[in-house]
Length: 119
Image (cartoon, rainbow, N blue to C red; front, side):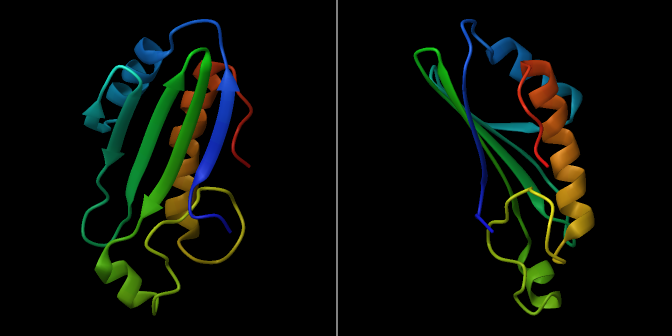
């Protein structure tokens, strides 16, 4: 399994307003906001994983990366079956509920952007 879920797509409009509204609705915190790169996270607490979403822009092309970042305690509890970064796609047995929650949140953004969902 890849460490990050990656989606690349072209759209003729600026998507930053859509993404910013999504982040606010989903209670994500902004980590970085540049003209061509934005990054957000949603903290999961001590036992849950942090959800990270990064969007990069290059002309009309966008690249969205999303991943879970399990806490050290979570990694210890799972006997390090939980990697430092985990993609959101379904499959596997590690952190299934947390990946499902993160996938659902990111899929709501992909719906807003008219893009295929993460399976």
